[in-house]
Structure formats: C-alpha cells, structure tokens
Image (tube, rainbow, N blue to C red):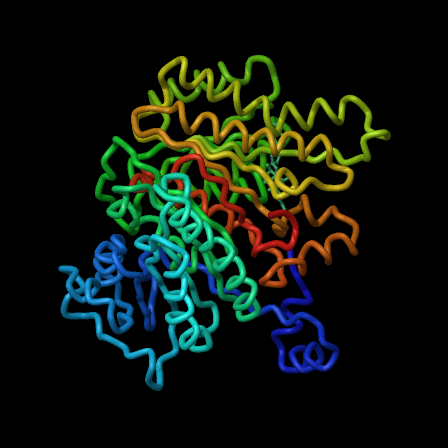
Amino acid sequence: MSDLYLKFVNTPVGKSAAQTLGLPSPVTLNRWKRADQPFIEGDVLVGAALGSKAIASLGAILGASPANLFHASGTDSLADSSKAGNKATALDLSGDISQRFSALVFDASGMKDTTELRALYDFFHPTIRKLAGNARVLIIGQDPANCKSAAQAASQRALEGFTRSIGKEIGKKGSTANLLWLAPGTEKQLESSVRFFLSPRSAYVSGQFARISKSTHNAPATNPVAPLTGKVALVTGASRGIGESIADILARDGATVIGLDIPQAMEDLQKVTDRIKGKALGCDITSADAPKQIAAFVKEHFGGIDLVIHNAGITRDKTLGNMPEHFWDMAIAVNLTAEELIDEELMEQELLRDNGRIVCVSSISGIAGNFGQTNYACAKSGVIGYVEAMAKQLKNGITINAVAPGFIETQMTAAMPLTIREAGRRMNSLSQGGQPVDVAEAIAWYCNPSSVGVNGNVVRVCGQSLIGK
Ligand code: NAD
C-alpha cells in the first residue's frame, strides 16, 4: 500500500510546500536492507549512571560492531570492558561536540534515587541535538517491579516518561527512543534486544519499553545473519499483509515456515510459501478441528515446532448497538479463542520444542479501544491478558510475547474511509504509517533464540501513536 503524501513531502517541491503550510514532514525511514549488514553504523555515544551494571555488556555488544564508539567522560567501565577496551574513545560533554551520532545509549540501571535523574540531563542535554536522522536512543533501566526501595522504583519508572518524551521530540527526523527494563542478573542477556533497538529493524518502534526477565534457560550463541537456522515456524494468515511479511522475514532469518491461511486464499498462500521454500496449509483456524489439523500437519512434516505466530485476524466493525451477533462471534473466535486452542493442542501433544516462541498479534485498539470496534478491541485486549498470564506458566525456555501494531499499510487499513486512514497515518511521532515488515522485524526479535529473557511483553509497533498509553 502506498502513502503518496510521504513520497510527495520527500521531494524538494513537497518539502517546501509542507513547510509553508505547516503540514507534517515525515522522513523516509531507513529499514533493514541486507542480511549481512551491521546492526549499527556511524558514531555511537554511551553513558551510564554511577553503579550501572549493563555497561560492560553494552561495551562488548557495541565494541564488536563497526560503529565508532565513544563514551561520556566518567563512564570508565565501558573502556574497561574487555572487547571494547581499545576502541571506545572518551568524549568530554562539557566541550564542543563535533560528531553526529547514530545512537545515544544510556545505562541508568544503577540509579537508586530521584536525585540521580540529573545524570539524564547531563548526558542528553548536550548531545540530543547532535543526533543524525533515523537515529536511535536506547535507555537501559531496572524493572521498577523489582526495586528494593520506593526511591529507586521512582527513579527507574521516571525513565519511562523521559524515554517517551524524547521519542516525541526526535520522531520528526525519523529517530526513535526506547527503554529496556532489566531484572537483576540479566545484564548479559541484552544482546538480541540491543541489536534490535539500535538497528533499522526497529524503524517503526518508538516510545516503548520491554522487560528482560530472568530465565533459567541459557541464551544459546546464534549466527547473527541467520539466527533462526534449523527452526520451524507456523505463521497464521500468511497469504498477504503482515503475515506474508512475517513469513518472509522468518525465512530470511533461516526458519522453515509453515504458512497457514483460509482455503479460499490458497493460491496466494502457495505463492508465498513457494517463494520461501516453505509449506502451505489451508485451514480456517476457527473450525472445530483446526487445532488437531495443525498439530497433525506439524507432526507429519517436521515432528515438532519452534515458533508459533498467531497473526491471522479480522475486523468486523459496527457500533455495538448495530452489531450483528455473527460480527461479535467471528471477531472473538479468529482474533482470540483460536490462538488459545491451537497452543493448547500443540502443548498437549508436546509438539512445541524447548526454547520455543509463541508470538501473538494484538493491536493498539486492544490497548486504547476504538470507535466501532468493541468486538475487535475486546479480542485484542484479551490477547494481552493471555500473553501476560501464559508468560508466567511456560517452561523449558519457551516464551510468549505480543506485538500491538498501530497503523500499518495493508489491505486491512486500505479499506478504511479516507479521512480516518489519513488521520491514522499521521497521528504518531513519525507522522506516517508503518510497513508490514516493521511488525515482522519485531516478531523476529522475539523469536531470536537469544531472546530467552524477553517474555510477557507487549511492544507496540506504532511509530509512537498518540492513541493509547
Ligand atoms: P489482512 O486482512 O491483510 O490479513 C489477515 C490474514 O488472516 C488474511 O490472509 C486472512 O485470510 C487471514 N485469516 C482471516 N481469518 C482467518 C481464519 N479464520 N483462518 C485462517 N486465516 C484467516 O490483515 P493484516 O493487516 O495483515 O493484519 C494481520 C494482523 O495484524 C491481524 O491480526 C490484525 O488484526 C493485526 N493488526 C493489523 C493492523 C493494521 O494496521 N494492518 C493494526 C493492528 C493489528
């Protein structure tokens, strides 16, 4: 689907027209292009609050990238970290800064009370205007739920408001700001998340936080170019839109994909699975025998499954008083109940392998509610409840997470009335709709075998939409 306004404002005539009329001027977002491209390039500046423990891991992750690494004066532990040792150069933030940064990374995990929040100002005030376009801000904190004192919890929670506000200030240049909250002892489980949030893979994710919790499962070493090698994935609703892109991206990352869609969509589905050398399964996920049919297919062809992506979804919009009952029933069945029943069957038959991943596709409608979508929002909210509850129950390194897309350019949103569609596109910090690939990249991050501690999260892929919290 095409956003003609975005194309127009990125021409010289369009840019000056938008400026004159005071209209939004979204920039074209950098997205991931080549499987072997570095996750970040350019100059990266890293800072830390006193006593922060993630800094050494950050040094190792960034030190192994081709980016030029700088650390804020006083952040000695970065220079001390083994791999980055001779690469990071100290930068005095009180002097003139000549660099343009592709990322600013701040480890605030050591903050113990609110007076220490001043470190955020000291680090970001002199540097925020030195960000290049399409840049990244990443803040690392401690999950407030695990803080020992109210003062510490307050300082850590404060990072959320700070991150979300930075996202709103830098979004007009196509840049993003996100926050990672660590549980104690997870400092070494950061790699897949840092790589995601600093790379073009997170182009449409801003103003979000993700929790990394303690996992008993060790993060296995993965091939960064094809981390899903040897994995088998099921993607529902894979014949088009977001599902098609999820199938493409998981296959790009090395997985063998079973694409599933309704029998009427088999022709399109077959094209997708042929392209990625996967397998096609025609099945209506709401039919009574769907869970058993899927389990039998998995068992017959692969003997088990590693990644289950519940993407199939429908809208059946009407205000509640005007809504026919089958609209209600279908929206709940496709968007919510089918997911539970499929997972239940796969687990009962012990087909979901250790270190497996379940990913559900929710929606910002499920967070904020939406006019005419009581049925859809109810189901997508239910998805979040399901993910949060299941995250506590799953064992053997299996995780479950959700993405909540905002406005994504697909046939679903192309069917919206023009004014609602245009409002949906612009009402976010990046002033544009996302692409299906943006949702798919977030799912690939959850699926990475190293994302063992990323469990029970609901990350919005919405360009920091103004709608919802
Ligand atoms: P889409 O309509 O383009 O694709 C949905 C796919 O699901 C279709 O291929 C469809 O045939 C399949 N499907 C529907 N019912 C099915 C069933 N009973 N059994 C099997 N397959 C079925 O939609 P999309 O925009 O690509 O959306 C994908 C997911 O993302 C959905 O869950 C949707 O609710 C969610 N989402 C989309 C947006 C957006 O802006 N496009 C925003 C938020 C959430």
